[in-house]
Structure formats: C-alpha cells, structure tokens
Figure (cartoon, rainbow, N blue to C red):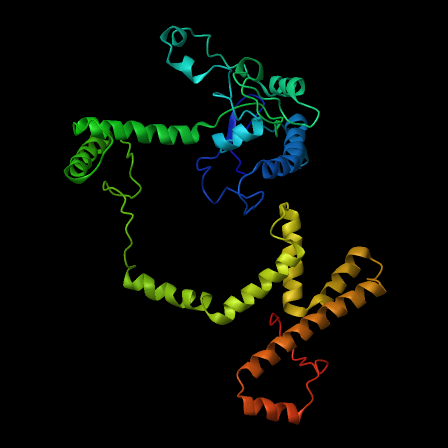
Length: 375
C-alpha cells in the first residue's frame, strides 16, 4: 500500500502535509497478493519493488509546471511491516533484537540498563550481509551450532532485503497501550491476576469505565473505544435497522443470484487462465489480464485479434487467428456437451430411448447459440 505523506521545499518549509494518511482517499495498493507470508513471497516482492525504490531515493524525479522545472527528492519509508516480516527480511530469525546484538537476558540487568551506550543501535544491513558471506556454506545454508550467538549473532538465513534494519513501532504502540490499560483496569479493581471470570469480570468492567472516563476528562483522549460513544464496542451480532435492510436487500439479492454466481465463476476462471492464482503479478500485468478476460468473457477469444493488430501494427498473423478460432470452438464444444448431458440427466429411460431413435448422438452437431459470458 502506498500513501503520500508530505511535500517540503528545499528550505524545509512544509508545502503540504497529509492530515489523514490512513484514509482510503489517499491509500493506493501497489499489489494485491492472496498468499500466505513466506520467504519466497517476500523475496519475489522485494525483487520487484526494492530496485525501483532505491532508484527513486537516489535520483529523485522531475516535473514541469507552468514552464518551471522542479526537482523532487524522494524519501520512502516502509512503515507497516510487522516484526515477523522484518525478521524474515533481515535473516535474523534467531536474534533477540534486530537493531543490536544484545540478548533478552541482558535486558533485565540493571547495570546494563543504566549504561546509556550498552544498547546502542549497532546492527546494519551492510554488517548483516558481511556476516552472512562469512558463515554461509557452499550449499547456501547458514552454519548453525549450539551456543553460537557470539559468532552468528542470530543470523539463520540469507537476508531477503538490502534495506537497513529497523522496526515499525505502530503495532508495538497499539499492543503496548492495550496491555498498560489492562494492567491499570486490574489494579483499579484490585484484581492481581489475569483471570476475568464471574464477579471479577464485572469488577474489571466497572474499573475500566472509571479509568477511561478519567483519562478522557484529563486529556481529551478516548482510548480503548471503537464506537463513537463512551461504551465498550459491542462485538455481538444485531439485526440491521429495517430501513437499511430494505435499501441493501435488492443489491444483495442480485449479488447472491445463481445466474450472477455462474457468470462470476466463468469470468474468474477466464482471468485465472491468463494469470494463474498461484503466481505473483505486478499491477500492470493484472490490469492487462483483467482486460483480456473481459474481452473473452463478452465476445470470445477472437475479440483479442483487433487488440493484437493494434499492438503489432502489422496484422495479427495467420496462426494467431487460427488459435483464437480453435479456442472459441473448444468453448462452444465443451459447453454443448455439458448442456446435452444436463438435458439427458433429466430424461426418463423411455424419453432417452426415444431421443436416441430420433436423432444420431453426434458431438459434432453443436449448439452454436453463443451468449456473452455464457461459457
């Protein structure tokens, strides 16, 4: 997801600042991927986007407005990658920290906590890549042995990104505030354990209300509340207001109709034939595949020929036309067989015999009543 944040002059003056960066008005998807997070997926995504990002940050861009040429320096921040993704990208699956080489046991040592330089940010992408080159085996795997943190520093695999190490604090802020509030609720209710059952749950609920009112009174902030009221957000299901139900019912009825389901299934199968769902594609390729699927869905494969002629500027070629004609004939042929089988399945044994006597069962006699999107 991409969103512009600000535009500043060379003097540092802010010419424009995005006041609502999380709004759907500004956010634009760079890629839509329906796949489980994995190292292979991260590697393929980074291979597509990181070179372009690096080029933009190093060279910027230029544009002309009212006969004046402007040079723009571009700063890109990856602000919403969670710790799981950052750990995989850095190859530091065995590290306690992505920013330094300290261990979690040291985080509880008061003498080290009081040292302002002990937990300095010392890890960098360059250092991690150098370390990987030193400890990687010929087969590409990282040598791992017991108690090797002093040498391996938690590096368990090849880094997937050359971007510098960092952590995104958005999730940490949200989770941290949530846990702090939960502790305050329990302390206010004098409940010194995490259990929230029976009467204890009611005590914590009352304490929660009192704490949130006090915070809002003193700071104006409404915390831990999803709704626009001072009540806790209700996650239970409720019937929609009658007026709203009457307004949206026709839309849902149409969307849920069997005819539309069949048409959508056909269209999606055509789209997947151009762009298989188990592969990654950039947005430009998805746009092309959707356009081709729309053409085939509405007017058959031969409708692609004029597009090919415009792209090549020198006709489409004999074999292209033959291939598209064959694709259309196959569509009609298989749909004809399917419809014929459906009709025969509904016949009685007597009707089936009469039908066989009446006409020869020949697959070459096709029903060519083609309808856009029918099959």
